[in-house]
Image 1 (cartoon, each protein chain N blue to C red):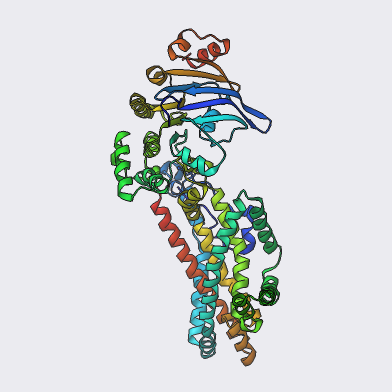
Image 2 (cartoon, each protein chain N blue to C red):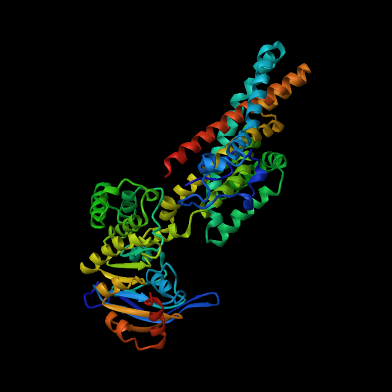
Length: 248
Length: 322
């Protein structure tokens, strides 16, 4: 909206699932065009934070601002905002009854009200961007995990989002397919997309992240540059976690 | 991907109670692929030719027997004067049976889809209304329901509409007065009431199938659809329902077969379907054996043919999946 507003601003976010406290007051700002990676042990609230940003989870309390506009619980408003925020899931969540192309055109037609021709044209452009235009007519079940995830990225990009959220996009992939997905993400980062990424891919983090956040027990423990976090983590918890994931 | 629904199992409404419907979640790779069992590697067959035994055992002998019974019965019917006479008399009811089954099923589909959707809705009123309807229907025998809906339910609604019309008349509003008071119980034929009764009854069964089908679709699908900005209605229409309906098609098909059978119940309302016509024939000629034998074979032929059709459609659907 306004150029001087941060793209994502999260203020004192709390999220409880019954007695479980997933988020205990998280505040975070992501400037336009920045790539922020969130790491942390499982159950630390990383995914919940990400899902609160587009209100797939409704926060218990706190505020989320997207491009200078505060999210409310009004559904019509939420649908509008979500169209501007692409999301990529760990398990891809492609629509299995639709071809790769239809996966990418559906929301363009239904939400953006684009004509079929325009939607297809744009979808092919996005499939080329993620490197698999030849799979346009394949169904998700016929694609490898890496290809599915790239279609999922194309599906999100086709909406021309201002922000891309990645929720552990490579955790469900076989090792040889991780690179093809990370390459696409790296290209996006270079093109200046604002990205919030939950991932433990340290190679990607080093190469693309402007900022890295370490979360534990629903709180942000450390928020710094990848270089600083890897080379001299301040907090004990961060050191312990890094020693565990970087051991091998 | 496979659909392991309730196909092949003769479907009575009792087998469709909510908790018993098993509509598995879609899985990209089947845990056990039946084809693997059919084509066992030779190494396994060495141990007492297990593979052959199994295919011998798995062969649908019951189905061969069924076809044989149908063939023998058909031959009996077609080769004897009395049976031909009975068949020619009873077949006059076929169109009523067909119309009743098809029309009731179509209405039940709409009713079932709406109720199924309200059962999963977060709206407390709709949710409970749907549940109430389903539980009410499930708790009453179908025969009783048919009497009740046709002879109590429909007249009550008509009386209600009449008094509403009278009320409009008293307010001086003429159009609704004329329309609403024009209904009368005599003008609603038993056949229509029978169709209403069957639709309402089956609507509850189909609602449970739709509900199970919708709930079999993983949460991730709804989330993915919402994350690109679709409303929950759009997500339901373009993403969830197409998958859900494909998953439950075998179950829906089986219920149509069940509907054809249960349409025989409308004979208690003196609707002249094949059952009623057979009863009339038996009553007037005292040829009970000819009459009911022919009737039974007619139903069997109908249901076996429809079951085969359902299975063929299902196979075709499976072939399209990868």
